[in-house]
Length: 607
Image 1 (cartoon, rainbow, N blue to C red):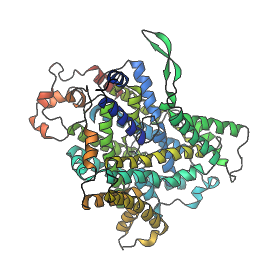
Image 2: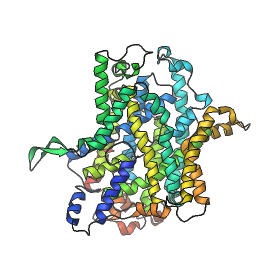
Image 3: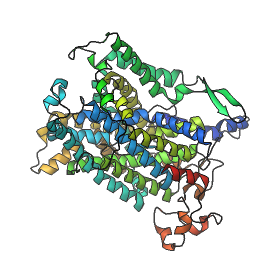
Image 4: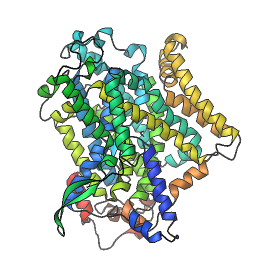
């Protein structure tokens, strides 16, 4: 979810939804007088199975990495507060490298064996909320001395055990929760989930992800409101006011040789540009000692030299590996909380699959492909838990929006993105550079990101009849309960005392997770209060509408490397939920086992 839909590259959900609607609207107007113009405007340069030139694949792959940049680095930076790592930049850089590395591996797996659409995988905010709720429990609260930079010895055994014990607890919960997602995906149960979950459940669930993180945004931004406000203003300027301004860039082609072409750079990379400009200004203010040099003074955390030693201490190359923080531990409370986030992530991913198929010129994903995609996402969360990112993985909606901007829907481009992210995870200096971003700059980014995530959740209500008093009541009550109950539990942690410690911990995590509380009330009320205006039919129809001039389903969604041809010899496999049905009818006789097409060869090289 990430939750996160945008068409302008901003790390959120809402804009990809609006882009998808514009794309669909243009298709519906093909019967108008200007149909030929609309058709040319929306024509894809490369469809999902096409293989662009290698240099174009590299450039667009790098762009997808940069588009997901804000969402990926935000997660370890937020988690560092709950893990007591605010003053340990070197460990933060290792977390950033690890999440980039795992995101790259999961992207390659998803594009090759999962849904097989050009969709990027990365960290998810749906797991961030229950993770922070778990870390706020009394036994996981950070010791007072870890909050003071002068008292923290990052190399001491005591400090290392403080944060690694919390990370191991997160890892174990994520691993167990991901097993549930693997089961739901490969067993085909995701279809059963979607029958009972509609807009009135999804809207408060996603909206409360953004609202519940207001404290993290305020804490970071409050370190220097001037710098954070500037960052927010720059991101808004680039993403909203300058998004249609094209800048000349040098390009090369065989026909025109070296020439310039105009690119809407502000529309594609507003978050990265906003952070970079603010970062540069902070560096200038630090160089000329405009910002205070005393640790206790307001604005001190906006200096860029606070973590200067992190870059020099970080190794050039680092190889993240499973269990690098120790043996994961499991707690019932953590597992139940993570399960709530996993379910939300699965629902959002199904919507992402349909949006991605429409924008990449592919037919709507069949059930076996959706089952496989959810199952592979579960495996991705399993890998993220084993490697120790402190988070899981999900489909990135902002990159779906980028497909509509570039008009390149080839999955080979996403393979290049996966390779880039693996490389960024291995380059230790890269993660160290990101870890040195001043706190107020991060806070400014959070102000925009979390706000749009909240609005993206509310946008799901367009499918429900909001003139209905039934729907207004369900949404309003769910949202308000999702704010009130967690806030009261956090202020009264001893109020839950059933006599069973494990059960108390489970309730503590669930009732302090706004996303779960709001989603739970929305789900129960929507499925029990009588009414025909729920919006589930409209929501499903919006995600199942076909797009014109698409490819054959088998050509897009069948397994790669001739596996579909090989598996056709086992007739019983057609009844397996994640295998293509009617295997024998969907085969290409000219493509025997071991003779993949050029796109599959490039994917194999990427893996």
